[in-house]
Image 1: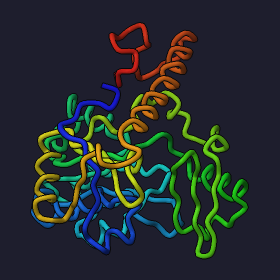
Image 2 (image 1 turned 135 degrees about the vertical axis):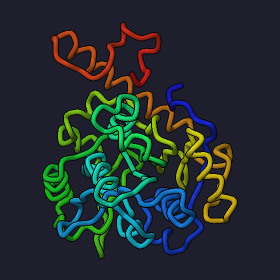
Image 3 (image 1 turned 90 degrees about the vertical axis):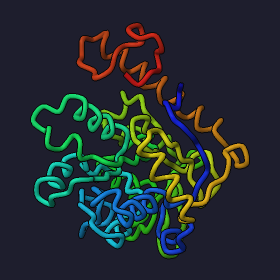
Image 4 (image 1 turned 180 degrees about the horizontal axis):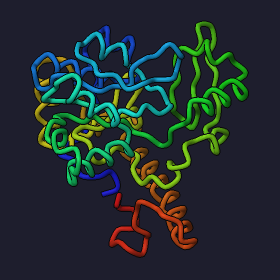
Length: 294
């Protein structure tokens, strides 16, 4: 399946007005972590927290809803959240840890849980993983450079960024600007070119804006752990849902973008393997499904 294995996929958004104001889209990551924390399903969550440098996040252990909400919003540059998981358990003493992850991070987490050499104390304490759709990620300096140069705006004045309709949308206090995504190519992390995962196939829940209207998110419930927290949050009235059949543009666009990413990445993987370069995936001729995330 091009979108990975899942139990359910719906359009959803948080019903919390505060979360709606600060969320990137439907506020699913913030809403689920706040609910899980309040109900004792997790003791804390590793999130991409704010720093003194705008748009340069750092991994933070959030122990309250306020700390989770302080980290709301997509940053578009890397936050090494996996590195903080060890500290969450050893330094903070957490027994049930949640974490937000992009696809490459979720892959590392699952590999660590499957082969927990040196981290046996950590592997069984990861209670909830929430993944964010990710086409590509940018080094901070690259992000700063192309936003400043191509949009002609002071990067320090940017209040929100979003990706949609083939563009990077940039908002300041008094203007809204766009950069065609094709003009950002070459600025992304080099490893993104061989990534076969767009929709975070390995997390408990994965979410992103593609496929749903503004203010909503597409949500894949992928595991038993994800199903437990998501259903409970919906039943508690903290998240509202709609069938994907009732929203536009729907799963068709998400399937297209996912297939495009996998196809491009597989081409690069095969090229690198042909040159004898190490790649953390099998080549297209080494697996039954050339686009499988292995």
